[in-house]
Length: 90
Image (cartoon, rainbow, N blue to C red; front, side, top):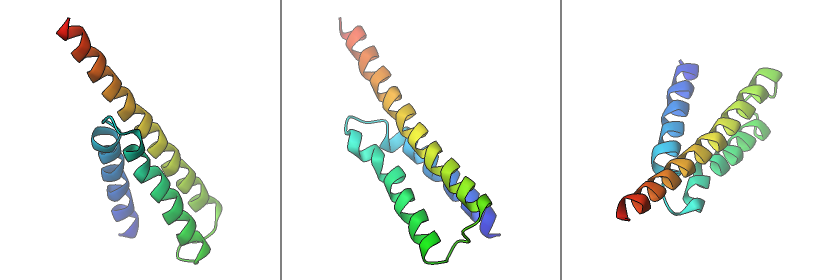
């Protein structure tokens, strides 16, 4: 059950990252989820709340990597929106 909650929460936070936090003019706002996920995963591993094994390390690396990728995609979406708006204004 905990795995299902983790997967659903991860998908929700990545979608939030791409379409809300990363898709705006404030570049620092998109860094909230990647940085907080690094801090949270580190805290969970060092306080023994999450087992320090190969599977969990790979899962953490994949999640953090995806959050940075989605941040970049959200930033690209914002850039496309700005460029399209400028082209239509001409």
